Image 1 (cartoon, rainbow, N blue to C red):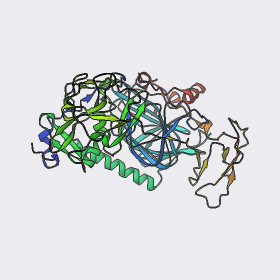
Image 2: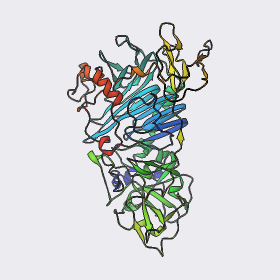
Image 3: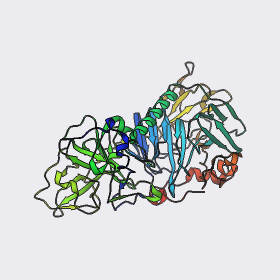
Length: 552
């Protein structure tokens, strides 16, 4: 059969063949139909993550395990992503983006579903991050950082900076609502709001800052992503889920596959390439054993759809999964840890291997792609080349046995708390033994007089810290036995999510969603109980807590 790339064929020729993603169901061992799982879509430099975090991840807690983040890693509720000398980007189901600058900590406090409407509540613990929000009807999106929370109920782009002595939000597109203890403020494109720490009355609305290098880089990524997704949707009609779709158009070509509609293959691979040769394995107690594609395109093909084998072309990815597929809770596509079927040879000690899942495979049936061979697991590694499946009786496994695959995500050190000021954006890195604090009166960093809280052995010596960005700054010796830091007490609880899409109703405006289920005071999370809830709320590792009804 001769294939032609669809880029030279009228897109309308295949619009009726591919109406939507019909995704494969996950293994029976993990019900992911109620769980929101998003991806890390960009990694540059030092990027780390931790899981199931409750409260402030930068507080002294030796029980938190930090690991190095990888491109296309799955992110769920309870994760924390941090950069040091690096940048990172997280892509949500509908193409919304969270882009982290250097020395930034972002907490995924709430990723939940209610009848198809997605609730996203994030906490910017420190640093700078930009957000492109593209909500569907009923979705809720907010980011809390330092002194206030920012809500967006329509398409918007904004930047949030969490400084030691205050917070600032810049709106470059759309409109947002800024929630504070004393009320809420609407911001339009080209406006900014800054607020001094500890003074809720000192909230100033000014013109947005001139875009810097980070802003221009973020804007370029948003535009590139949106353009690529729009083009790819000519060949794959996926309205409710677009994460990773633009990367398929950028890094590969689409082909017609008869009744299966459009198929796709990455550039630069030969007929003998293995789908499982472009990534690593990642284990999570709530998600299971997932394959993490280490190429920019390595998200959709490894978690949705299936694979076809065509002589002369090798493996082609198909977004359609007729027969064995379906949609999850509220019509959200179901995440599959890997688009592969695990098999074991006859007998308890038989060999274990994996076969790319065919779009027409039914669960617990003999995989249709078994005739193309099986990729055996040897010493915890999936072989690069398939071997013949003949001469052996194979049984489908509901889940891969423990220790079959070696995960390759490595452990990392805990991130340091970083000090920055609104005046000049000065930076100082505070190690885990630092009591460095910003004095608003003298506009300089000083040693904190707060009695230190010690845990464990006290180091015999502590390094000095230099304030970057200020040539006149002098090194300040940090007390060796302190773990206090001035910004920890400024944690603001994320606002509760309303049950209606009416983010600006409290401001007296009409954003097309009915009335808000909460008042202005409740949204700011100002009360003592709200603050306690924000610092100690569970971030739910299980699928039940990750996907229940929205809190209100």
